[in-house]
Structures are given as C-alpha cells and as structure tokens.
Image (cartoon, rainbow, N blue to C red; front, side, top):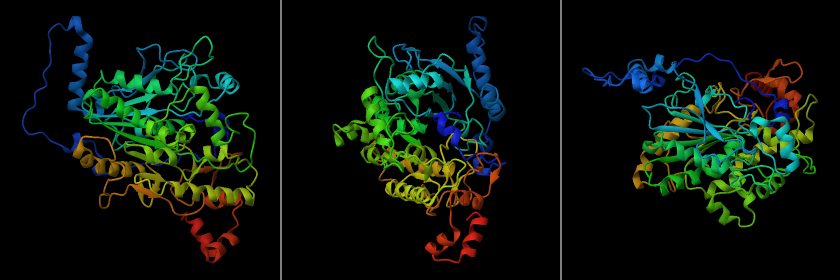
Length: 495
C-alpha cells in the first residue's frame, strides 16, 4: 500500500513511520479469549463424499480449527486473495479486468471495503504519461495474487484491535477517475473510466459471499480513495436498499481525501496533475471521465458538479454516516498548492501559507461530528502500521472509530434507515469521536509520525524540523504572548 500516491509527491515525502512496540490492552483481546462457553459444543462435520468434495471438507476442518484456536488459525490464511470481476465489461483504464482482494471471516457480519488511492489523470496526455510510469494504477495485468493487510486491514488484533476479524476487501485503483467514472473503453476513446461501476460490481459479487447477511459495511479509502468514499458511500447504500438489503448499515471512512479548492501559493498553468490547481484538474477530469457524483450533491451544484469532489461541499449533502480522517497539513494538498518542501528552508510567505492551510482545514471540519485531525505534515493513515500510535487529545484513531461504532449501533436500529444518522448521534461519555488538534503549526502534536531529513534520511527533532520550516521562535513566542524560552521548552518536550 505504500505507493498509493503520485510518484513526484512520494519522492518529496518527509514523514515516516515510527516503530513502536505495542501492548494489547486487556479490552483489546479478541473475544474468544474472554468468552468461555459452558458445556460441550458440537462441530458438525460431514464425512460423506470426502473424496469428491475435498475442498469443502478442508473448509470445514479449517472452520473447526478457527473455532478452537481463533488466533493461531488466523495465521493459516491471512492474506487477501485476488478475484477478477465476473462481469468482464467492467474494466481498468486499459480494458484489462478490474477486481478485488478478499480475506473472508466466516464468523463476522462486518465487512470492510477499502478503496486504494493514487491521484488521477484528466486528459490524453496526462493519462498516457501515467500509463508509462504507473501502469499498475491503470491496468490489472501485473497485479500480485495476494496482498497483506496493514493498519485497519490487518488481521492481527494487536495492530487492528476493533476490526481485525472483519471480512476484508481491498479494491485496487485502476480507473484514474477518483472512483467516479462510468465510461467504458470504445473505438473512439483511449481509456475506460469505470471507478464507480467497479465499486458497484464488487458489492454485487460480495452479496453472493455473505455480504447479504452483513450488519455493517464500512466503505473506507485513502487519498483519492478517501474522496472516492465521499463520492460513492450513498450510491452503495442506495444499491443495497434497492435490492432489498435494508439490514446492512452502510458507513464511510474517508482518510486523507478531504481536499480544499483553495488558491495555490503560486499559480501555475494546468499542464500536469500535480502543478494543476485543485479545481482545474477536477473540472477537466469530470468531463473526461464522465464522472458520477451523489445525486443530492449534483442537485445542489447543477452544472458545477466538480464541487462534489471537495469534502466540505459534498459532506453536508450525504445521508450515510461518514468518519473523516485528515492530517491538518496534508502533503498532497500542499503539493497541489505548489508548496514544495525540498532541502531549502521554507521562507516566511510559505510558512504563513502552511499555517493558514491548517486554519482553513480546521474551519471546514468544525461541523463534522466524527473525525480525527492531527496537526501533522503527512499523507494517509488508516493502512499505516503505525496508525495506532497517533493521538489527538490523548485518543488514538482506532479508539475514536470504536466510539463512533458504538454511537451508531443504537441509532441505526431506530428507523431501519441509513438516513440522517450522521448529525443526530449523541456522544458517549468518555468516548470522544470529534478529535481535532488546536495547536497551530505542523508537528506540534508529539505523536506525529517521525520526520526525516530528505537528504540524509536522519530523524529530525521537532525543533530541527520547525527551523527547517523557517520557524522564528522569537516572533512566534511574541505572537503567542509567551517568553521565547518557555516556547523552546515546550517544543523540546514535543508539546
């Protein structure tokens, strides 16, 4: 999952993971360790026609093993396996079959569908360039047979305390359309753009694999996949409703996909996807892809549907509950705004722009009841192995998601509908789910991912990093109304 963003930005990345050993708290142990069943249990095994149906027999043996030894049996089959879509008319950009990776968990009624990220292309030139340099994001011809889940897709309870036992589905991104297109490849078009149809088709196939009996479907995604969640979560809810599966609660988890349609630090012509201003790229793209947006958002922005790719504009129109994960200083946002954090120290104009970006983002998230927004310079979080280490106001993201989960459990049963739940959820005492850092500069949160010097690869302290960013301690102390030495002390302590 490490390459999910556009290569030029990947090369400029300054934040890295922090390796920490973690202890599983008692409440995070898998349920099987806590619950003891009184009396004998029977595990019916069908020994008839074993030779003719060996696969089915082995499935039963494995289910028995998992029932008896849930943790060790997980090791038998932890990777997600590739399945190409049966409907071959739904394809990647180059016409190769789209597909998904799945690790089923027979005992669970929770399904996690993850949309991969990876930016987009918006015309023949940018798509041809992308096909030459990042073909796996446009074609399925070289996809591996298996994928190992990390972060919220991990089957290990110590890495993923609340979702480890869910049915895991990873949907690779090969449509380059922010998961919005419905356009097939024809004799007149060079590429297919079918991101929205890929999601729809995957859901249809999963209904034959147990999704029909699910209680919760969490549509998650990072970067372009995070925006894809905002654009598709209501479509998925409507798809299941219209087919009679009212019992499945559809929710969204959008990670690093809440972009701002702000003014760039330096204006540039829209020649490639990275230098192009946020709105210009999407305006070009939505025409090229034949992009589909949520109906309620389309009606709110008739003729200007590009607005529906920006979180703060599409979110108020959504019916499904959505949890937003967003770094306040997102590297992808800074890249499209033409703030490039190279080896040269940042000058005062850029520093001011970066701080203003954090304030702008904070204000767009004010009315989002369920969210996690640390003041770090980074991009993507939910599939990182260190996703448990980041905290906002003493609460980790898995904990906040668990609180959100609990808050939705009761409210969704009241009217059997997925509508209007996101605004009416009362918070549970001691279980926060609206978490946003209030400190004003990048990496003022001590739990941010480790920063590395881009030239040497050496770890940087917060104070070294802020100096590199052009941070003036004297001036900042004056602005904050405190003694410079006090501020230095706070920075050295990571506060």
